[in-house]
Image (cartoon, rainbow, N blue to C red; front, side, top):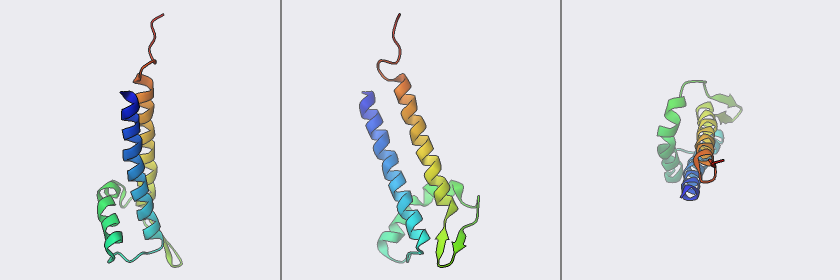
Amino acid sequence: MFGIIRTLVNIVFGVIEFLLLLRFVFKFFVANPGTPFVSWIYGATASLVRPFAGILPDFKLGGFVVDFATLAALIVYAFIGYLILQLFSHIGPGYYRDP
């Protein structure tokens, strides 16, 4: 049972991390937000990045942009996924054994 839950957590957080990574790359290369796929990525990840917006301003490096809100979201969601997986590894079968 816990194996299935761990797999689902891995899948959900893997998809979240992948979408955020795409957003970060598109923002970095200043992709055209008018294209349907880029627009969809920005819309799908907007609610995930919103809590981190405004913490640090975007850093412009020549023709590139480093979006620190997306970078912070990537780190925080990876950490949350890690913590959830650790929680399930501690309450999973075989963790508690009678002496």
